[in-house]
Length: 345
View 1 (spheres, helix red, strand yellow):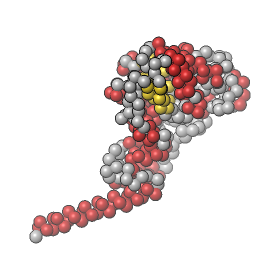
View 2: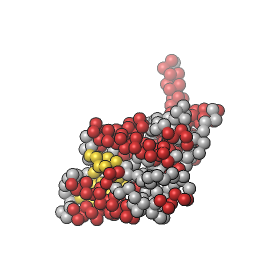
View 3: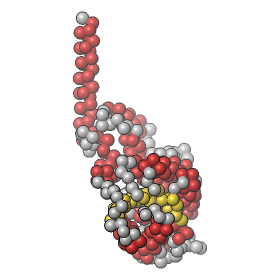
View 4: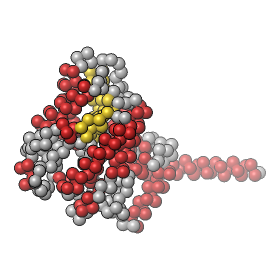
């Protein structure tokens, strides 16, 4: 009798679990999550260009090279056409290599947190070279008080959502822990009237907090994680010191009058996109030092693009984005280092 009651109870618990799982999955489908593989919502919503690269058949052999580009808008396909420029230069330098396959996941606004997540999502793919170029977008996260700053950048809604998904790798097996966590967190945030800072623009009321480069430790952790994963995968990693142009003796304001100090370009970003000019420069310098530190600790490759790029108005559209002349020079300097270092032999 006891055994029968036990099995009946066990059956009811199992049915309740299955029913609850079904209800939670259907609820998440309403918000756009895939029913069968809800964990893939991370790629679907936040990094939609990653899935084709995860599924791509990466060519192997002496006749091809596979190159991954991590970073922000400066090396994004639509802003710089970096792949096309590098392909032309590499074809001349390596006549015996028939094809260079570029996988560019650099996106406007993305910082080291995004890039470490994207690289982890591509952990099953092997690359002959990984290029990292980004040190300015991090600055947005600094524009908040130290008390409200989170090292994982969850004081920005974008990262708060991403981090919650990453906390639940079991989602494809069961969504209940994630769903309960999501509901609890949403209720808690609402009761506490939690506010997030924007990942697109800086609130002038908070811009003063940007002088404290609170992102330094987070940037170090993220770049170190990229370097460790590259070493684990045997992917040669090239960390590139970030180049910027802050005109000497000029006080930039973020207004239209700043344009006279740069080359007219179709797409530009005022310096206030990242904070106060002096704080943005300080942040870039801080992050560049960390790039070199990780290079020395992890024995990566390292190229000083900041020293290689001319500091003049003909090269830059704003404090970081490159003019056509600047983009050509950038590709030439980068390819020159790759070739001279024998990275793609």
